[in-house]
Image 1: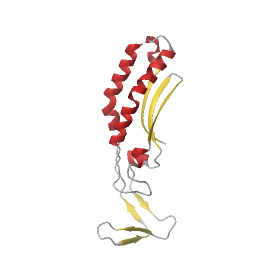
Image 2: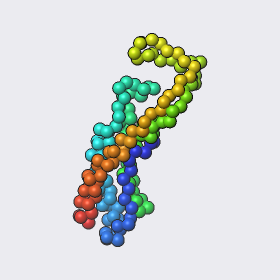
Image 3: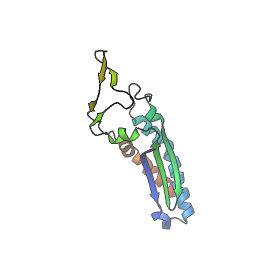
Image 4: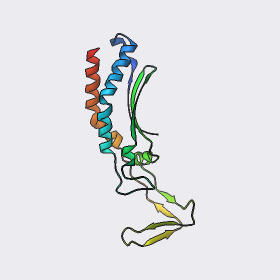
Length: 156
């Protein structure tokens, strides 16, 4: 799974609360408050291809984002990740690279402008620009995250 966003809270504030249990409860409660709104914003910002790419339907990356709350060892984290095997390439981009056929003698595609079949023994891919939609989403939702954690900790 490719990691996208992780919000983590550690036990440094335990002294201000009555116990480790209260601290964990407060953090889990805050994570539950933001879980779905952050997921919705992340999915809203996820790029969607215009057509299927290598068997993945448009929206596959967006539709395979999962969220998970974990707690233990003085840490509570809310993590968003994707099962899409290409998620890292979208977020981090790719360097220029050569593409060669794996299970055939030539590469084949249809030219989108002329409609003609194209055959090549190898092609040079110029690479792709990174799309840090998780980072941009984290920046946008940070006020919500801070407000949720502050409101929960006020109760304790």
